[in-house]
Length: 193
Image 1: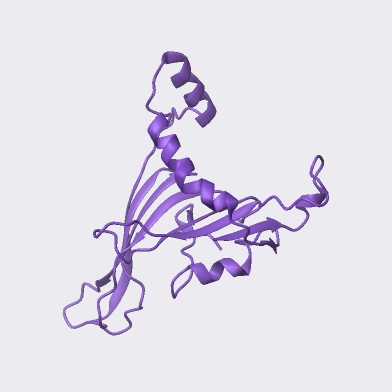
Image 2: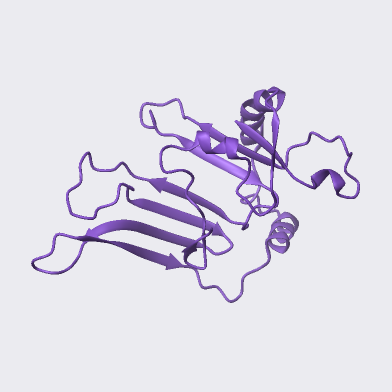
């Protein structure tokens, strides 16, 4: 785990000038089952990052060797974006549709939710609470399990590293990501810088 605090946080009104509270956290987790063996789960969240986005990216294993010229070493991906848009996409390399070419191109198939009557998140949450709809709320068992996982992390005395606002967090977090680094979130159909 890597913790961070953006430069200037301690000068924020109401914040202790000696605060060691993190404004960023990055983790590399593993699920203890045969199905997910050797599959890293990377999570990062923080304040003052370049964009606000919530998404899950699943990168599939790469073929053991290149099959086509100009094939880059990145595996195919499935991307589930929840914020700022709801998007489900498949990103892959495919052979160009020409008879005599064995070159590949990057293609993406996306389904974007176009809902003109979207209710803002807090209104939706309050409305669900007032109507007794439990779907948006965690169960007691889920909350207890989350605390079982998070409590040891909170007790861990890892250092809090500084990072500049507008960056993706402390450089120390780069060591958590596999070769190729963190996958940037998508904003308006493009990778965030």
